[in-house]
Length: 220
Image (cartoon, rainbow, N blue to C red; front, side, top):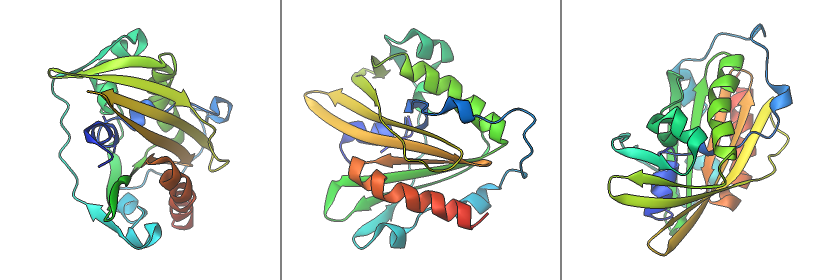
């Protein structure tokens, strides 16, 4: 999945599930296929627009990116998501070649982890691509994800998204395993032909999202 160390569950979430785990909040504002938009940004250009340690404040350090691992992952109890395949469950179902990602951890405690992803493509393609996965997730407030022999209980709760960008989505994800429970907030905002996804502890996402969107807009 994309997704976030809050715990082993959040790591699975932040480094593999963020994109595939957000519910649409404003589908009416989706762009048409004929909408005129600038050319997509390159991955290098997106990387320049990512949050950095200075944006998060003292005590935060950027963490190395882990290689994506999508082997032997399946969804249980969510037919619409199962239909999209394991790639949807791991966030790999997004066919956007231009992307950049940064993850951060707070030196004083793992409960303040944060992950940001930027994607660029045609505005209509961004909306359509993520919309398929969002709709599937919304249809299943509870389900399970099997990763090898590990079964993770998943829960989703739609939350209000701030009035930013052209389209926006937000959701709380709950990961339960072996008596441990982690909650990760994931909010996405489309700004023209760029999709901003911020995932992590609820408070940190709330204070970092506006900075992330502003950074994309100011560099446009």
